[in-house]
Length: 358
Length: 260
Ligand SMILES: Nc1ncnc2c1ncn2[C@@H]1O[C@H](COP(=O)(O)OP(=O)(O)O)[C@@H](O)[C@H]1O
Ligand SMILES: [Mg+2]
Image (cartoon, rainbow over all chains, first blue to last red; front, side, top):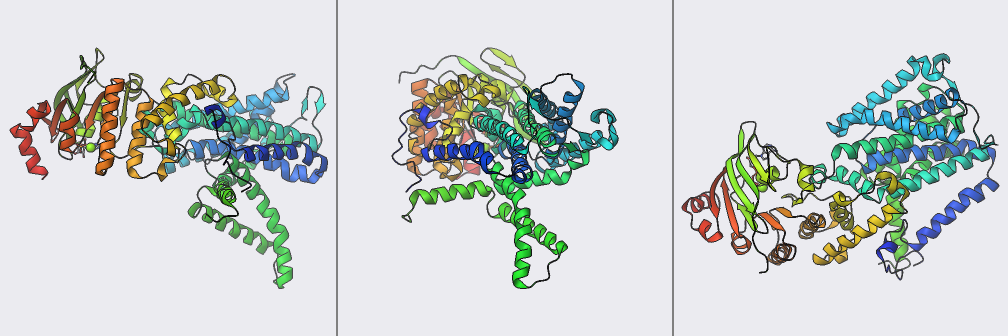
């Protein structure tokens, strides 16, 4: 009974089309943002920022990018990490090669570069779908990483493509502590998530979903498939590109092409599968889940072995981690394809009726 | 009826369409006049759906030409057809399953939207204004089809009959000049059929929409159509007013041969 829209009658279409039509959701989001922007920075430790929150936000952004392409527009991609690499290296190049380039501008340019590369590798989607398209994006994954290793120009002639990015400074303020980096990343991710939410609830998003659900009907309505698919590739890669730039500039500081491996692309894919395909919220839930699960198991498994007097060594723990991972992916693929976001929604629907069972 | 049947606005001339060795359509010619309800009938596999697909550019005939709005073309292009005001429904419902009824209908208006994705990302300003403006139009269609109660429901969860109605709604949301309906009443019960008939007649009457309709129920066809084309094995075997067609020996033979 605490969570419900009953009694909140919409008297105009404007009120009905708000970003969060239910009041409790609006309050929830405001609280969450207050905690993220004010509460957490006041209380969090350095470790918490740099090892958990910053990577969580960055991977949420990458997952959001992939979700736009796969969840909304229905085009499967296995190249997310490669598009992050494009963003990281592009931002680096704009920073070191252009005198006085503002760092935020180089992030935007990094996103745009990734968008351009995304469009290029999105071209096969005009002809092929599903599994075959996934294989084509796999080519992007390997080709991009290969290029970054192969052409020293792209890494400013550093050995084996490793780049160490310069410090982040905006309008004279140095973002050199984990806390300040966290706030910078949080701000950018919040803005981009808002933009994504707005896109998916307007014509752009409806065109993506139309192409995903029934491309012939979409075409007959006048939606241009080529334009719609390539726009999805561009926007998705933009998000991944910015995520990559943040990954280099605000998380690791130093990256190499092999760091953006197929393994990482798969992890981003698992994030949206677990979190929810076609859900903005799901991108965040999935990223949190996939990043936190290993940390959680690291703590729980040794304790468990202690308790049950089982001789777990390090290797067993990592095997168990993989098995739990695999089982969860299977669970979400088979039982709940809409992921944690859907479970959350079901919980809210239950809460709406609570305490009455029907 | 207030409506007046006008000039020929769509003229199909000697259309032939093949899929490999299969001749789906052979040398078919017929026309459609403004504001009329034109039925296409014929046994299964006669080429009726293929005909609609030629009209709105999903299929491209190997031979023939199409005159539409005074312009002669080799074939149509889906986007041009939609932009020229042709909307349609499909024999096997082709709704956007993951989207709500409202979103399906809003998608139907996409060609009337002028804002771009950057404006959408910002939302405030032009994108929001446009969204509201089109929402108002879509709500008119929702009222017209009496589907207010399901506007927020994902279409995948709706029963078959309602899905058919929503698909009509998506086509109507585009405010089309010409509506192509592929078996809009197939698989419906009597009551649903009556509703659908009423909607089709109302659309034709109130908005003057020209309608090309494929239907198996002869009773319905004879009742609501102004003129009927009969196809059989990809060939045209009859064309004229319902009475005329009903008494055509070739048509009777085709129907006796394949259907009851
Ligand atoms: N996309 C296609 N590919 C191959 N054959 C097709 C295709 N569409 C229709 N046909 C063939 O064309 C013929 C006419 O089909 P159709 O137009 O669907 O008939 P109707 O709608 O009258 O039942 C059939 O033999 C069908 O198999
Ligand atoms: Mg058919």
